[in-house]
Amino acid sequence: MASAVLDGKAALDDPIQKYLPTAYPNLQSQGQPVRLRHLITHTSTMPGMLPLQVNTILQDFTAHATPAKLNGAYAHYGQRQFWQDLHTVSINGPLGKDYAYSSAGTELIAHTLETIYGMPYDVLLTQFLARAAGMHDTRLRISAEDSGRLAPGYHSDNPVVTTPMPQLPWGAAGNLKSTMPDMTKYLRLQLSAHPAVVESHQPLVRFQDDFSIGYFWNIGSNRQLGTHYVHHGGVPRAQSYAYVVPKYQLGVFIITNQSGDATAGAMESALAHIFDTVEALERAK
Image 1 (tube, one colour):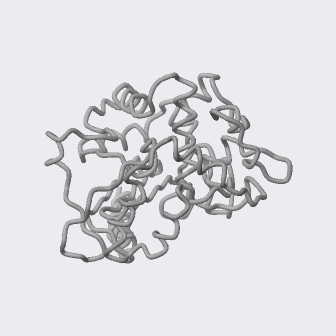
Image 2: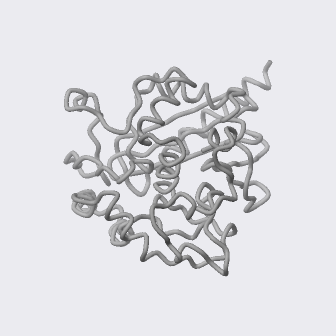
């Protein structure tokens, strides 16, 4: 999306309706339409997921039955069903103010990019990553031949391997598969002066003195790390964190194939030691 803005193909204040296949008069609040900037900053008040029943399933995220229930909800759920369900969404503004993470909004951004560039989102994604970062082993869908390379996932300390992550209509919220070497290249990209990266790191909404959001990036600020960029992702088989810390020219990616209520905290504890060590090394120079 940052590339589309820089290319002059989209503007952050564009109403999302500009890119949708039919009219959605419900996607507005207090006379103001949901705009692209609201979606990329999670301030649209869109529901977390579509179909809406998935939000109920995820309320009991740690239950061992949750992965199978998610698979059932998405078994025959494609873009056509997404467009139908989008008519039922209620926007309870004010827009652009309150942070509420929305994977449904992320999926809408993927569709918007397809409309802008006239090609499937997964193709746009893989082409950009290959061109900008030399990443050739990152994709939304993997072949049966490559399925054996995917780490098995475990959910909430259940010793039984989980069912696969269900494919979402566009796959822009939880379906990416990658390798550690490719993620190293991604971190190098995020630490570079690539124009789209610089644009994507711009703070668009400030929630607190030490917390803003850019193009989906959470932007933190503290004494130890300075201004840094963070994203956490979690599904019922894996969780990950990406940290981009320009102060130290440091990028960190951590992922585990176990997902439970204590997983994020355990990863944060592991990262805290790394950051303490890096700070001490910098002081010793």
